[in-house]
Structures are given as C-alpha cells and as structure tokens.
Amino acid sequence: MTVDLSDLVGWMNSKENENLEFKEAKNSFEFDELARYCAALANEGGGRIVLGVTDRPPRRVVGTKAFNVLERTKHGLVERLRVRVDCDELEHPDGRVLVFTVPARPIGMPIECKGAYLMRAGESLVPMTSDRLQSIFAETQPDYSAQVCPGAVLGDLEIRAIETFRQGWAQKARRSDLASLEVRQLLEDAELLVDGGVTYAALALLGTQSALGRHLAQAEIVFEYRGDDSSIAYQQRKEYRQGFLNVHDELWSTIGLRNELHSYQEGLFRHDVPAFGEEATREAVMNAVSHRDYRMPGSVFVKQWPARIEITSPGGFPPEITPENILFRQSPRNRRIAEALARCGLVERSGQGADRMFASSLRDGKLPPDYSSSDPHHVVLCLDGRVRDESFLRFLDRLGQETQKNFRVEDLVVLDAVHRAVEVPDVLRVRIPDLIDLGALERAGRSKLVLARRFYEMKGRPGEYTRKKRARPFHPSGAAREAHPRQRHTRRSDG
Image 1 (cartoon, rainbow, N blue to C red):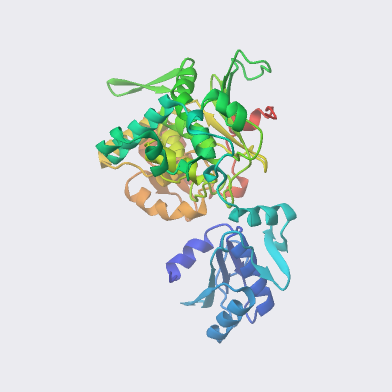
Image 2 (cartoon, one colour; image 1 turned 135 degrees about the horizontal axis):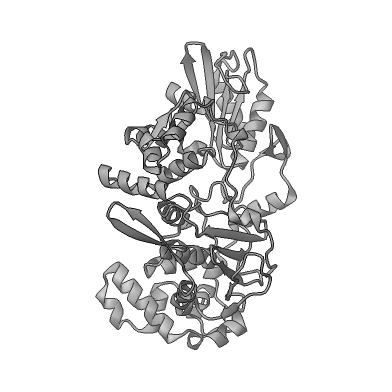
C-alpha cells in the first residue's frame, strides 16, 4: 500500500515500537544497517523504517540524501533478506523522506541477515533468544487437535454432546439434512473423524469422562470459587473432565450462582449489569479450550472471586500473539477445535474471540480483559467485574442512541483509553477523527484528548472538564495508569 504525507504525520505523533523506527540519516545511511533493521522488523511481524525524520519526539522532518537509486536499494534488500521490501519517497516541505515498508516474515521462518537472526531490544538490535527462535520454528508443527488419537474409538464420544453439536451446526448452517445424517458421517463431514480415526479435537469437545481419563486427561476444566481476595482456600471446587460441549452450560450456570448485579439509572429506567457478562465469560472459557496447548499436562483453571474471574490455560500464547496485539491478530493453535466450535455457532471462525470479550467488557463500563500476568508457559486472562464509572456507561448508551451507531470494538478501546488517561494504541489512532466527529471526543491542544463536555456534565463535574482542557498536554509515558485487579493479586496456582 502506497503511503503519503498524512500517514507520515500520524507516525510522527506515535511512539517508536518494534514495528516503527525513525532515523535522521540527513546525509547517508549504511545499507548493511538498513538490512539489519529490515530483518528485525520482519522478525517482529513487519513494520516501517523512516529515514529523514529525527529519532526523538517532538519529531521533525530534516530530509535525507540516502539511497538516491531506490530500485538498486530494493534489489539489494531482496538479495540480502529474501523478502520484498517496498520503499516510498515522500517530498515533504522540509525535505525528502524515505519510508521502507517491511512485510512480516513467513510462518515458521525467521529472517537472517549475515548469519544473525535479529530482533529489537529497546533502541538496539540483538540476536533473537533461543526460546524465541524455537517458538518460530514450532509454528510449522501440525495442528495437534487434528491428529488421530491412537486407541480412541467412536464409542469414546458422548452421544449427548454429539447431538448438541449436530443441533448447533444445523441451526448455524440452516441445514435440515444434518438431522438425519448418521453419526459417523456427521463427524467425518466435520473432520472430527479422519479415515475412521477419532481426533483429539473430537475427544476435547465430545469425549466421555472415561475416554478423557484414558486418552486426554489434560482436557479438563477446574473451577474454584473464593469469597475473598485474600483467601488461599477455595469455598467450592468442581472438576469438569468431559468433552467441552457436555459441560459448557453447566460451567456457566456455576459461575452465575454468584454473579452479582450492578444497577444504574438512565433517565426513568434502571438497568442491571452483571459482574460477569455471559458473552465475555463464555468467550474467555472457549478461548482457553481452543488455544491452549494440549501437549502440556496442565488443566484449564477458572477461578472466580466476587469481583473478578481469572482463567489460566497451559502453553503460553500461540505464535505471534502477545497481550498487546491479541485484539488485532489471529493465530489459532488448535484450528480443528476452533472450526468445530464455529460450525456449531459457539465462536467466530478460527478467531481469537478477543474482540467479543473486549467489546462486551467495555460496553458494560468495565476494565478491558487483562493478559498482563501471562508468561511463556501459561496464558492468564483476568475479567474485572466492577462497573468503574456509571457516567461513562450512560455516556456510551446515550451517544449510541443519538447517533444510531453501534460502536466498533476499536472505538470502545479508544474511548476507554482516553477515559482512563492511558495511551491510545498506535494502530487505533486512525479512529480518533471519527470519534471527534461523533461528539465522543474533543482535542485539547495538539496531542491531548478528552471525552466530550457532555460526559462531565452527566457526571456532575463540569469543572473537571475545564481543568482537563486547560491541563498540559498528555504524555503517555508519564500518565498514571489505573491498576488492573490482577496486578494487585499475584498469587496463582501452578496448575
């Protein structure tokens, strides 16, 4: 995609990260150094290196004389890296700017530059760590859930779960013929049976308790409830070792037994918001079932407190997924499970489901889903059950009714970030002009954003609006961030 000066202005107002690099390069820039940065950008998922702009904010265009023969430079990069790097030459009033756009590396293939696999570490380039390289090479491994389980037979699958799957698929696909399809043919059509063999996906979704005990004991969900944040012992524990389609409704019912309601007034009407919304909670559990690593022995843990739920699944994030980009990238670890859940209408096809969790949480006036406690061996997701600000919830409701607009999840993330005075993700800054036009946001100077005046009037704090409009520009690196509950409670089971 060709870039222009408006793109450049947007990048200059953004923070440098692993996908965006600025170099002043007024007179020259070494080709070897360019190739090294392009390799690192490709290994980090792709990005851009911009020459002719000062490195540190506030950035300004100074122009560059580097690489006067761009076709030769691009040809040299292809020969060196074996990936195509595009380059756009922009004529800015303050000088010539070069923008090199680097694609993401191929799946399972890190990009090498003169014998080194490079990545970013702050402002430096360093060799990729051994565990990072190992995870990249592992990307090409076959889908474990699609493999046939030795020794498993059709009788290891629960008839009730199969019928749940059949009904969901028939309703989603509007296929009445599925009602009369013989079980074996139904499962073969869904690729849960392969050449007559039962796949691990079939066991994880449809398996009986005894079959999972023999073949896939780790496909278990353990629920625990604690009535107090400081409590080590649980007040209730239930172990669900059956195919997921047998237990997902029962698990939600168990959570719902202690699902407190928060009420707020909007005009003449009173609305109830549950601590744990059904859509976000179910999606979070299905996410763990779809994307955990079934080669590891641990169970999925669902731990509930009065004001938060924590879901821990074994295996770390799938390749190329991080807490920072989970809303924008998809990389299903167990595609066969994800596709089966999509067939019966429970999840989006092969998606992460994160967009639904984020949208549901933010529309209810809660903190966004938090993955910050995850590590290379576990994904830890915390859902906060508190409505933080009734005025913000009423503001979203009223704005949606007046504009007849259903806010995209990206819009909700931007509004939430401005509300909490945290940094708007760079990739979402393009949504800011539309939100200003809708009357949801206002600018206060060149780099500061505030919620619209009416939000503070609804909140009964018009003076706060005035103070924010007059305050010094917002600098993300120094902003006070609201701590997520999971960051205040660090104890967790190794299970």
